Length: 166
Image 1: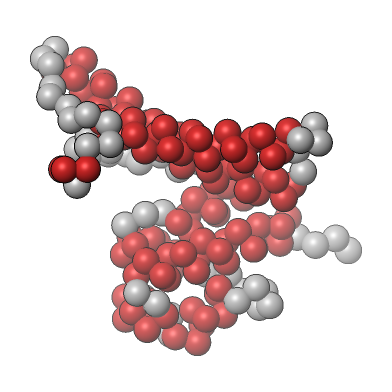
Image 2: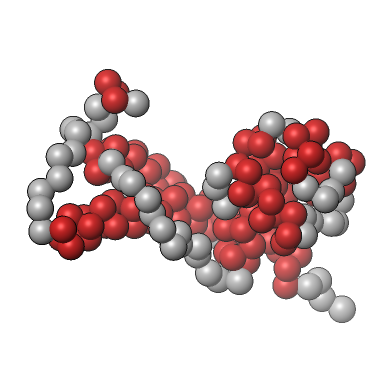
């Protein structure tokens, strides 16, 4: 009998869970905002354990972390990407600066991938999250541009990498 399809994605989901737990302040903080206890959260991020975080708990963690770390990994397992329904306010200069940095990261990884002229599963696991991150930033910048188009008025933007404004 072969392993279930989902087993290939367990490591990525566990990594995403660990990231979300870090962002919410650890397992103790997570236990306070969810139906799951401290020990179970430890198991959800432990690669030697087979269990993964349930979707309802992932929603709670990602909501508290203010980023869909776990849900992105789960969507990726099914061949999907998450896109926000509402982008909110954006800073075009900051978005373009972040997109530039994310693009450089993607290209550096792509250069490693291209050294042997093949994309291995491990390399795909490394580059896809980076590409999705760059895509998310670009989508936010596009939403800002569309808002400018819709308003038919210019909007002031700060220069790329303007650290004086945060």
